[in-house]
Length: 250
Image 1 (cartoon, one colour):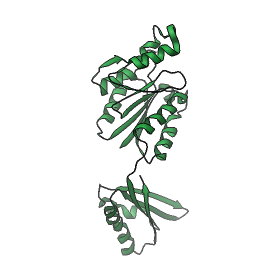
Image 2: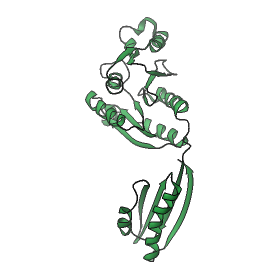
Image 3: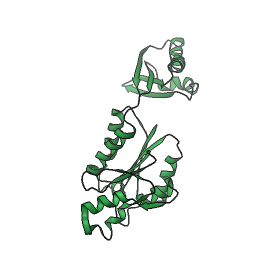
Image 4: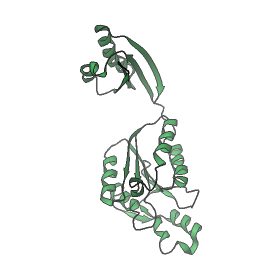
């Protein structure tokens, strides 16, 4: 699966607050063997939110965590945007969410807080251990949590534990550290299959240049085949190198 995070909040972009969501989600993904494919920090602007949601929806393997904008104030657009993109604009009063809001606020839920129970049709709920106002999710892939870390973090763990507890796919990775410039390997890089992940890290120490190259995929034979192209280049050009062979959970 491809994991994305959307962090919605103009106050993050104008410097009034600092983000705490990315690092927490990233840590929880890594614990379970998953990786972020992309993370976006965007302002509270409905058309822009819809565009980013649609971009992620277009990835058939996407899993998304959206932070912020699910409250009851006029600038909380996320519930409506989620419906626009993921449920063809259809919303409903989620009775379980309504019950939770009334349990927490009683008559104080009216006239505004109760609107937080209006969610995309058939949404599932995520427990809010702080205020009892739930987060929600659609199709077991698209999760929407509050902007407050104290509320959001428990929901992230709940969602991951329930639907994406562990990635059992084995990744085969080979790493080479060479006493050469990254530039020396560019032609070889162009010849590497798109079915493997290629990483290149140049290192400069004084007047010495090094390059750390890695190839990884879930296909052991293909990984070795593509990686051998770098080994052959080093041998053919008398470049010193050190090898690592790593088998790990994704």
